[in-house]
Length: 104
Image 1 (cartoon, rainbow, N blue to C red):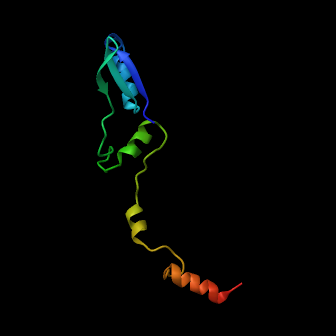
Image 2: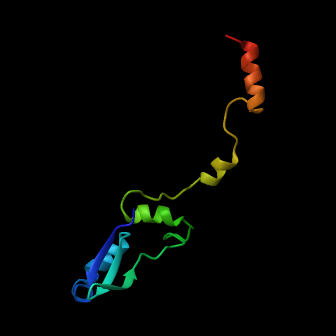
Image 3: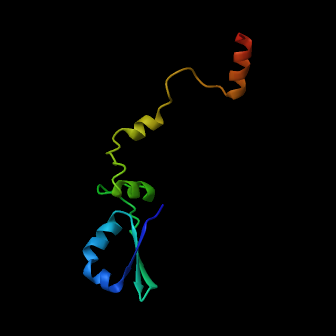
């Protein structure tokens, strides 16, 4: 759920730093002039994290909100290339037939 603050122009001028901090945390700020919406401050959707690696915008929102931490991901590509340990999988039908053969 996106949280949105509504502020008037005077409040924006007075508390700009505080409102920008809220935007950095993932909030949206709607600016109003005489109670008529005129602008919205929204977080920029980053395409990379600090080390140049690409990340999904929803992960970055969680990181900014303090809900998740992004690790270095060392070794992940090698893990994903390997097959999981255990017996070779031959398909769902074969597994069901084998289960029926062994019976209760």
